Amino acid sequence: MYCYDNAFGLKSNPTPKQAKNFARYNIIIHIKTSLRNAMCSVKKKVLIKTYGCQMNERDTEALKVLLMEAGFTITEKEGDEDVVLLNTCSVREAAELKALGKAGRLLRKKKTHADYKVGVMGCMAAHKKELLFKKLPGLDFIAPPKALHLIPELIQQSYARHANQVAVPEPTFLNFSCYERTYSKHKAVARIPIQQGCNMACSYCIVPKTRGEQQNRPFNSILKEVKEAAQWGTKEIILLGQIVNTYHDPDSRKNFIDLLEAVQNVEAIKRIRFISPHPAFFSSQLMQAFKILPKLCPSLHLPIQSGSDRILKAMRRAYTKAKILEIVKTLRTIDMRASISTDIIVGYPGESEEDFQETVALFKDIKFDMAYIFKYSPRPLTWVAPQEQSLMKIPEKVKEDRNQYLLSILTQCSTEYNRQFMGKYQEVLIEGKAHRGEHKLFGKNIYNKKVILTGPESWINTFKHVQIGKVTASTLEEKVVEDGGTL
Ligand code: SAH
Ligand code: SF4
Ligand code: F3S
Image (cartoon, rainbow, N blue to C red; front, side, top):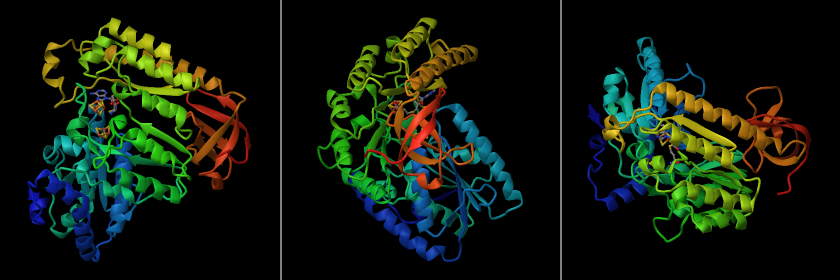
């Protein structure tokens, strides 16, 4: 196996300070120069398949910019590519199996295309590391999330040296400057990473192992990206991170509230959201921000995981049902219609029927209008993994039943929530073409509800007043569209 950093003489064990400076300022320059020299001879087409969360989606966008700057072409059409990258997720076993299956099928193309390259990036590259070369014979390279900025060079090296099985050792820090250049210009909504990794060690979760310790992005780097997006016409910002409400600037005392205020002050930005906050770190100032900052939308994703205090404790979530109820009550006092969505895990080891019924009761009480409901998936390297044998394992059938039961409650709650918009005018920021229907577009109201309407593509990235004529559990549909927004 060929080790990337030695080939370039990069330090393997720099001090944290050296590594920080190195990651922030030097690597990109080094890569840009060497790539410009090297890329003259090849102009390969790269396809990126993305799995997992919005962080991965955003990483894919950032990588596309880096690849184009390095002289590669991006293709969205499968079959057209010379290089395929799978940006993977490890949060549940099913996500890994899906990507492994896809990689296996793609690798078959090597039989007829000798020059075809397949790489695995993202969380599974950090989790499985070199084991992936055993699982996927013929795999060319792997790159963990913090090595995002090294990928163009990695592909280049793979061609130049006719090397496969190339692994990038994980840099200590992510280079946040990767995100400062916009890929999709004139987009209505921009997702802006404000931190990387997580220090929380929730008992079931592999993310701290795949993305590493929490690393906060410098305040000015975030604002630079926000302003750049605003210049390209973006109207809505979604701040991304694993525990956004613990954000603080590494170089000053500025915190998440300061960040929300700074984004609020960017004139061209009309809407702000964030994902995901941790219930344990919800301060009264953050609640007040929903009142004080007019651009902060009354739509909150609050991942509660369970409604049973016993299970929350076992999960090491550091809050109780009472805290969740307090957050919800405060937000609904500020805006009685506030949309509240969540993540829930069913079938955590030891979850009794009583525990589950507490989750059901809390779900009905809060009436979440959107929820991601997951069946617990045992993950290696997690805090609970070594103890699983001694805990009551929940049979798959029970997990499935609990999942379906909560989904049925969700359908009732979300349909009921959406009904309140019947006949009402909603200000909709139009994001793009709808998946189905000719001349159909989709957008969101301030409550993060998807609205389907008919109109020309020129309406994308504009505000329209839409009277709602039909509602389902997941969408609102137009009756009448009027021009312009109030903002
Ligand atoms: N940082 C976010 C969540 C990131 S992971 C937070 O704390 O809310 C996204 C979601 O995946 C989690 O909210 C959780 O519901 C789910 N998840 C994580 N590990 C899981 C596992 N082992 N099995 C099933 N679902 C899991
Ligand atoms: Fe995982 Fe918990 Fe961190 Fe979220 S806060 S990423 S669930 S460890
Ligand atoms: Fe998955 Fe990694 Fe996101 S494990 S959920 S892609 S942070």
